[in-house]
Length: 250
Ligand code: SAM
Image 1 (tube, rainbow, N blue to C red):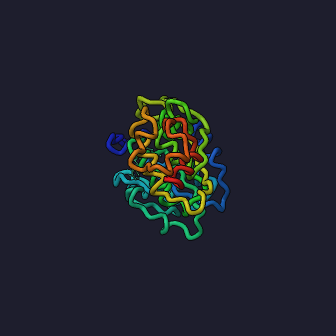
Image 2 (image 1 turned 90 degrees about the vertical axis):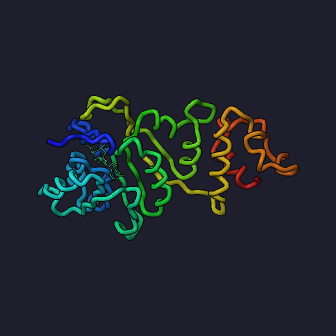
Image 3 (image 1 turned 180 degrees about the vertical axis):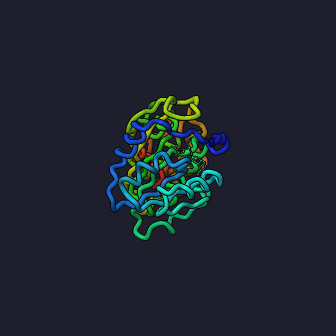
């Protein structure tokens, strides 16, 4: 009997139909090289190995790691007992073609998203289970309540799609929140974009989301650049393209 540990966000998937649906949504073929984040007891892993054997599991919990190692089904699979956030995917692939899959711990969703941004050269598609409200923010459109800094940061790098929502009933233990399964694909970032400037502008603007940009970005404005854009707008009015434009002129 395995007791779920809250500190590692352990809510295990127990619905076979849903596990099949998740695996089919990832459209894996036998040549795909998969990295599964937080395999837990291996419920999803069992479905993935029916599609491809090129699979690495990264599980932080030593107890779950041991039971995964003892599972004969996973004999040919690389299993690492470590934190995904300190894992260097360099060691897992040579051609940047990883498919990353994970029913991840929700308390580290943002660090995992930023880990994906940092390591984007190593993977082609990612599929994650996240809290529904978090997915709402990732796919939010401008001028909506969910449109936020994480929307603007992620949509610079990625095209994100909600595949489907998931009820708490398919997990054990049952979480208090609804979930969404999302697909993340890479998109081209404009050459020569100053990424540090882009994130600085997003941070300053959304730190004071009700204020006009002429206030929240005042430290970056001067007589010349303040004429080049309508700084009476608020951050939630701006598209990613407009944030890119601001990174060029400020
Ligand atoms: N994939 C399993 C399933 O669907 O039943 C388990 C999902 S559970 C929500 C999250 C899993 O991630 C747990 O097994 C947990 O121990 C593991 N985990 C938590 N933090 C982690 C980290 N930083 N790096 C790697 N695995 C982690």
